[in-house]
Image 1 (cartoon, rainbow, N blue to C red):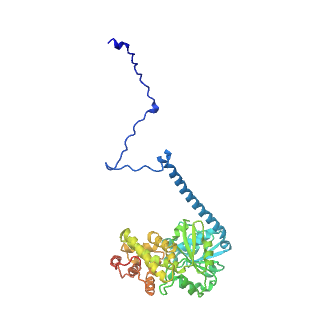
Image 2: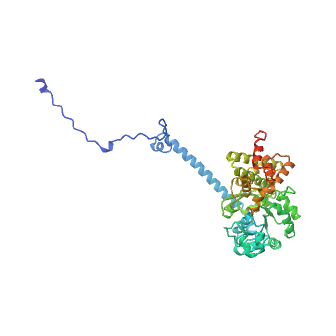
Length: 449
């Protein structure tokens, strides 16, 4: 005890104050809504790692910048090329064109007349029609009216028998409609032919004396003439009695109503005359309509004719509720059949995979605006063809083309099971259900034939 008094006293430790800045609260554990043993998703590589400033983040940031730079440079090159090409290929076609004429007043003929008319205010666009009442409607109210025969007999019956093409669109005032071929064709620089294929020969023969031998004909009609199996490139020169009549075909995925609404559209003009195709390209091209050129008239015309028949088949599949698998298989098979026949006739395979081939096929087969698809849809739903056709005020070219397609296939010795089935259904010799069964029971063949 005496020794303890010689030890120094032990100081009492004072409590250290806690600094709020140094307090670290533990993070709550992550909450998962899946299974108990679920693994949390990895964190985004572009967020925290780059902010950390570590050695691994810098290369990632640099790589991203490089990718963006490559994309930006590629886009700028494309824009510069586009502007340079337009400067080099400026044309005075539109400036020197004073008048164009449109033969026929259906939806697409009307849309093309309106498209050209809006490009140049002082351009005269003449529409040659057969109904004087329609002409008066276009000239006075600038709306294309279609009047049935019964309604045209009595003016007071018009309200009971009227139909409109593109009724929500007012036509440009520089469109003038007439029933006089001499008046419409006089002084025309270009002629758009929009008369249905089956009526074209008779129509053209009636106006041939008024047609300038050098007037370029731009065909908007798609199909095959039943008794000759010919396309418009053969029908127009034959009917006009001029084998050298300049000819261009315009085709591609395009609905008239979308063209009138100035929605982005791309089409193809094809002609054996490269200079003529370029002139029509310049005449029609606009900010909402891209025009490509081609020399493959056969490929563009055959694809445009046969896709209407395939669209009927696609509609039948939809009407029968056979599903997406069936639809994809049928359209793929139909594309192959079109390619087999077209190439036998001299078409280029690249044409058939482009706008006027695959592009037009996709639009016509899959979109409800297609008249041919709607015919097939109603056939697949059980309606009779006569009932369907009597209720339509526009022509579905695929109905009349189907038989001609099969005759053409036989001429070139090409097997076309899908398109042949459509022709049999249209002839009322096969029901849609039976046709599907027969097609599914065909021999299993090489996919690459």
